[in-house]
Image (cartoon, rainbow over all chains, first blue to last red):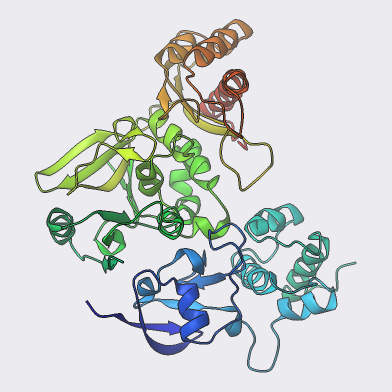
Amino acid sequence: MSKHHVTTTINGEAVEFLCETQETLLDVLRNTLNLTGSKEGCASGDCGACTVIMDGKMVCSCLVLGVEAEGSSVTTVEGIADGETLHPVQRKFLEHAALQCGFCTPGFIVATKALLDANPNPTEEEARYWLAGNLCRCTGYDKIIRAVMDAAAEMRGEARAA
Amino acid sequence: MQRLNYAAPKTVNEAVSLLAGASGPAKLMSGGTDLLVQLRSGRLKPELIVDLKHVPGLIGIREEAGGFVIGASTPGATLEAHAGLKAAWPGVVEAMDLIGSEQIQGRASLAGNLCNASPAADSVPAMIAAGAVAVVVGAKGRREVPVEAIPTAPGRTSLAKDEFILEIRLPPRPAHSGDAYLRFIPRTEMDIAVVGCGVNVTLDAAGVCTAARVVLGAVAPTAVLVPAAAAALIGHKLDAATLAKLDAAAQAACKPITDKRGTIEYRTKVAGVMARRTAAIAFERAQGRAVKGH
């Protein structure tokens, strides 16, 4: 049996690739498609560094087979900005210095966008629970949560949070 | 190295034929949140993965004859978003929702959790408490199996080689019914149960329990239905004496192991406490009060 031929949509563009069964979607994104924004932290679905949105659901791309992407629509961190214009979540992460080493940041950006798409006005508790599957070993999370809450406020058209 | 093949059948018959005809070990896949981890660790070495998500009926929730039918591969996020299911079976939905992160919820399913057959699977005690039935299909046709008869030991199920779960059925609810699931973990999220407990009760108009199912997880090789704990509740309101009998019955049903999550003594003691707390939530819900579980 030859490699699987997969036709899918990634960040709005039609994409075709070949993969072996055991290659994960994360392997395909990083090694075949050169979309290296999604990171491999734990490779067991615990850290969230590989978070992507697949058919409207947030998933760990390390726990999805590449071949499962057939016919689906995937958004990675590379698809969050609008061309050269950063998404408000990305801008607020920079403004609040919500990253240090940056390894977890793509996963947090994708997860935060998914949160705010589903719930534009989360409480801090809701945001913290939503992001429980994204691990950060640098920031202590506080700056991340401040960035998330401020991005949410801006996207709702409210004044900057204190 | 043996090549790993993948198939995504589009019908029940195609899936059954693939499983029946597999020359080597085959593994069923729904969300893959356990399967991919076990593949990578080398614990599992199948020759074929059968992805069931494209079989009609495997994804989705429908109401039927007063109950709910949940496609076997339906992700947790879809259960959590279903207002009717949540109102009728808050315990089942909260048990599923406790599994992993939001990312895991995008993929993980009730039947996957059941067939992975971990003693600590969160959704399983809640499903058993609910009286859930798994609709199993295979080469010999279709059979309905109580959820408690699916797992037989850690990592093992009663499914034949050519069988898989098509859907999970939750029965209709009598008036004044409520269910709940609690688990004990040493943190707030992203952990595996030290003890889990599912309770499902029906009360009469005066608040006296007329029917109950109490199930413990992570205290034996499989989830345990505890009839003695149900008997402690039936015929009573949830007073101190009833809670004490429930606690004792739950502890008596434990056959746990000592591992890094807890000792035999600790798990046994905690099982009694979890039974008390879970029953209290189920009784509140049966009396029409919305109670946040965990």
